[in-house]
Image (cartoon, rainbow, N blue to C red):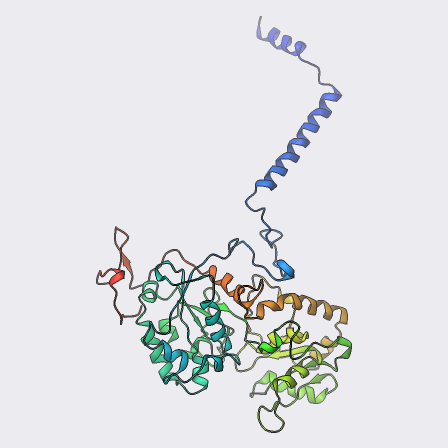
Amino acid sequence: MNNKQRASSVHHNSTPCTRIHQIGALLLVAATFFFTRLFDQSFSPCNFNHNLASQNAVVRIPHGKGGAPSWPERGYGSHLSLKIYVYDENEIDGLKALLYGRDGTVAASACLKGQWGTQVKIHSLLLQSQFRTKRKEEADLFFVPAYVKCVRMTGALNDKEINQTYVKVLSQMPYFRRSGGRDHIFVFPSGAGAHMFRSWAKYINRSIILTPEGDRTDKRDTSAFNTWKDIIIPGNIDDGMTKDGARIVQPLPLTERKYLANYLGRAQKKVGRLKLIELAKQYPDKLESPELNFSGPNKFGRLEYFQHLRNAKFCLAPRGESSWTLRFYESFFVECVPVILSDQVELPFQNVIDYTQISIKWPSTLIGPQLLDYLASIPDEDIEAMIAHGRQVRCVWVYAPESKPCSAMQGILWELQRKVRQFHHSTETFWLHNRTIVNRNLVEFSSWKPPMLLP
């Protein structure tokens, strides 16, 4: 049989393609597509309860248990898994001075109040943390405790002494030298940031700095904050305002608030603040800005402060000596919408919180009647919605134990987890073929003795 006959035979012996066959083929294709997608979704490694709608989605306050913000797995991991070594005050000569002053007279309890309270709270919470390790060799990160803002404010150490003591302390830390400080954590809780340690740029410019302050370029040649290695933390809010159900002041319904907006702060010769004080004089029925007296018979106590703060729909937060302001965080606990009037401000946990849902940022160059007109144009329904979002988020401003599902400390731990490195080295660290870590003189790491030259 030739090829033509063979082809003809095959053609005539095949089953004719009917309408039923065509429909069956289409159904087979559809079923194959359906089951393929089903199995892809069931076994995909990305099919966890992520907070992102897609890899390119914008984070819009993802919520975990009880509506609290939760951290996305992308870039952070599915759970917290890190080990932090906390230096003991007795193991390093000079560390006690950074905590309690040259004479050891400053009590930790005295440093809990005010903006510098975060130094004490973070230290205390890490000492109690399940992520604390007492073995340096297994630590991912190292925490260096110090209450220098408080110690300086009380006169227990001056700037020169703080600088000298920090250098002395660092020279006794082999692990600091091993990594060049990259795995060491420092807290600077005030507007001065790391500038509290005058030689920060020389000694801890690679370290992880926890600070509420992201900008001091108004008074310094350079900012100590680096967005790629440092972490912005919330300010220290009065404990009396962060306890659910037992706050010293409760929020007022919007309809009972006397003012459209308020500004509660001193002028400090700052342009934005001076403009607000003048604006309050022009529009006293819309903007409240009382004179704050912190001493004398007309002293403005904390109760009076929060009573005034809650009496407006919007709480104005202009720049002061530095870009950040505690008033921003306080506003969430009296449930007024914060209006940021600080162009250079940095805000915490930006991978989790969409600040457009909970606050307003207005150009500081446009402080004037236009600002009040804009705020007055916002419907109460929109204000209530922003307050409701803020109510869900504010738990991340509170320095609470790890047993709480949402807290500032939880946020800080998640951010620290992103900083962990598997390998550590510096300009004074070298290694050999057998993985032995040595210094410039080929002395093994286990034999490095203080004081050491700092990298």
